[in-house]
Image 1 (spheres, one colour):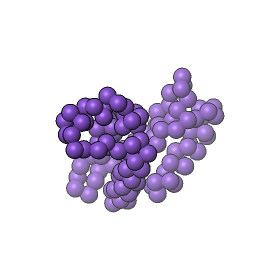
Image 2 (tube, one colour; image 1 turned 45 degrees about the horizontal axis):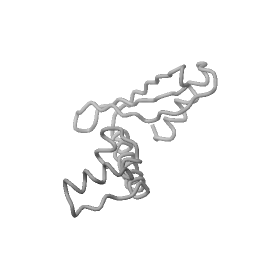
Image 3 (spheres, one colour; image 1 turned 60 degrees about the horizontal axis):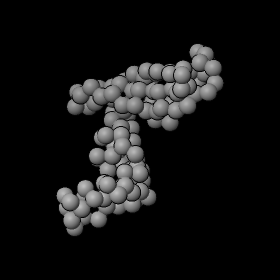
Image 4 (cartoon, one colour; image 1 turned 135 degrees about the vertical axis):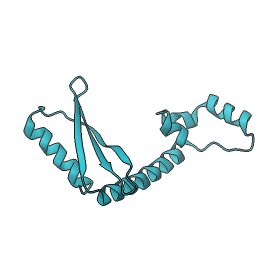
Amino acid sequence: MKVIVGNMLPLSLADSNEFRELMAFIEPNYKVPCRQTVTTHLNSMKAELARNVSSEMTDAAAVHMTTGIWGSITNIGVTATYVSSDWQLKTRRLTNAPMEERHTMANIASRLQETAASWAI
């Protein structure tokens, strides 16, 4: 799971014959999980990470949110920056979602409010 996430690889890697051959060469007794199992594990990892990030942000004195909008693919990304309880500067991507409506101040503010509400900021 960490290899897929850390290298932004497609989930289909788990079903790849070449990957299965590589794993059989490295560790013949290891059974590579199917894509559905990988998806289940990734969703579990995502939920755990979201809980940890949410907890960190709850403990932070302040959370700074920034946004980026890419016009060619009409996505909005929202990033949170805060100082954790152990004085570590943290930067976390909270969302990256399609934004098909016009990029007006009101629409961007609405998206920021939605993101803040969903993360209890």
